[in-house]
Amino acid sequence: MADEPRLKSSYELAMERLKKSDEAAGIESKPLTDAQRSAIGEVRNFYDSKLAEQQVLHQSRMRASVDPAYRDALQEEYRRDCERLTSERDSKIAKIRAQA
Image 1 (cartoon, rainbow, N blue to C red):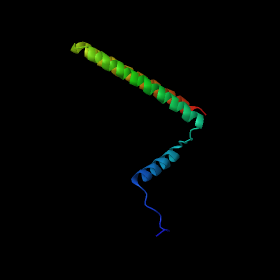
Image 2: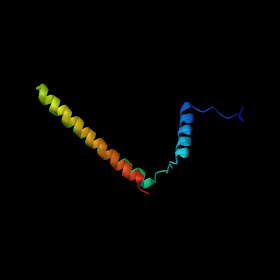
Image 3: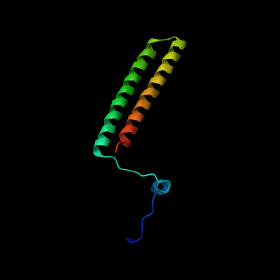
Image 4: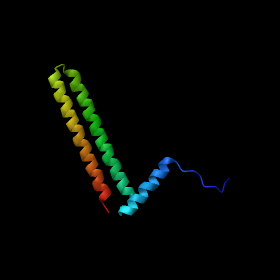
């Protein structure tokens, strides 16, 4: 019983297939350095706090207004700000990952 190979989960099988397809396509995976990990963590923490700040400000503005048109404008502005911050975060993380 101990000599039999253990069964793999569907997750493990999927990850093996992805790894093989990446190798066939010529995509190399390089592990992140400790410096890159900490830089990515700092970027994520910074943008998480910015997003939380935007959410608090948005909620307070929404509570202060009863005009539906103004509330719609506030909602759209909040959505744009969240998308901008998320995009900035993702691009900074991609730059850190691309560093050799």
